[in-house]
Image (cartoon, rainbow, N blue to C red):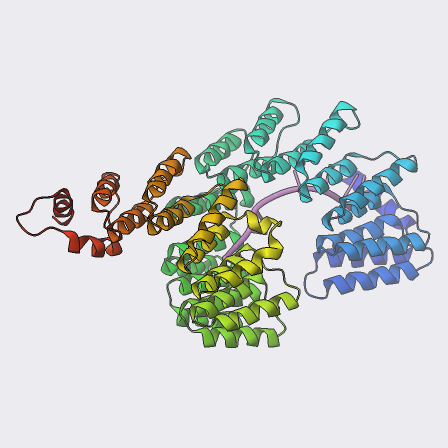
Length: 576
DNA sequence: ATAGGGTTAG
């Protein structure tokens, strides 16, 4: 204790007065928060650069790190450019921070260029340098390259990887869904001298949850605890999220109690996971209770929490309650963002209150908020469903004019809407320029088109689309097969329809309730009663009930009393 | 004494 103090004194006594003054200001900025933080840091930076003698690189690195933590990567890089212009010598820390900034800006190549600079200057990159680059590759979705770099470092003995580097690789493997590889690496770490910490476990636990293997995740969590690695709030968040995603809210709530018992404080996001999950399940009541529970702990719901509530109320059609949530936000000075409003707009559209939706859509733009693809998608769907395809088309054009790229959902909404309004040739024309893009790799889009063309009276086009999809190597799903069975039957091609029913099973795609209903209904419509009977029995044996529309076709065909028939027996069995 | 890894909305 005495010793450190003496060292500290010596440090400050040799420093110039301005150095300690700047140190103080950096420290106070590190603890600060608020909207002026970036500007304050920039101002301090300017002051420091104007000082003679120039500030040391350590202080500048500290300050720039602050900027990096606020995700202002390009600003950080421009500050380094300035220090270079001032002739202040750089160091490896500064280089590493710069590499990280380039990686975060999706410029891994620049990162590697800086590595070359380091080497050219005869310096030795360190673990942080390499790790930053590996992570940069991971961030750029080049996990394979990241793993290759890691292997090369091992092979050429360029560095001795530590926990953090293994963690980066584990995280990368998880990101691309190679959870079992990640788990393997984790186990390897456990057996070695470089023991994994909670961060590495978290990556795998989260990945297992996303792979729908929540129980495995829970097991790993237990493993980890046994090994003396304490779970943190992120571990619990992942597990609670995983449990909620599979309807295991009760266990999730228990997990929350457990974590508090273990002395890990849940954060706003922990509760928001629960709120969101209850809302999606339709129980806003429970969601509101979760909000109360968080407030009781002195935590305050944020934009995300409130947005989840809005979604919950909209889902139940309780749009008035959703509106009230906006008021609650305003009272607490929480500013709704584009996602908040998009959910409300979607709620209005689903309630067929298109006028309200449109007004809000305009209003938020007047406020300076910029609608994103999802906002537009909701509006487009709303316009189509309220019987205004022309306005929808106009909005689509406007969105493109604004430089907003439509996504696959936009096209699904648009094509569905157009086909429904007998504009399937326009729809096809719209897609022509997209033929070689990945948008046309979407089975959902084909399903819409096939169904649309057939309903517009173009069964041949529909059949052609199905062939096209198969030729492309896309995998038809239940909906594709169902629509095609319906198309074939409508065209009187019963053999083809029946063949397709068998083929879909062979392809590992089981027919569902809709498939059978469509098949039976179409056969009945075409007076193929014996065939219909066969499939009716099959569907019932598989536990599927005829739906309303099938029944309507079925009832007039029940033979009169006294006459016995299979159909009659089936129906009696069903109605008894 | 300044750098590198993890969760998180539609």
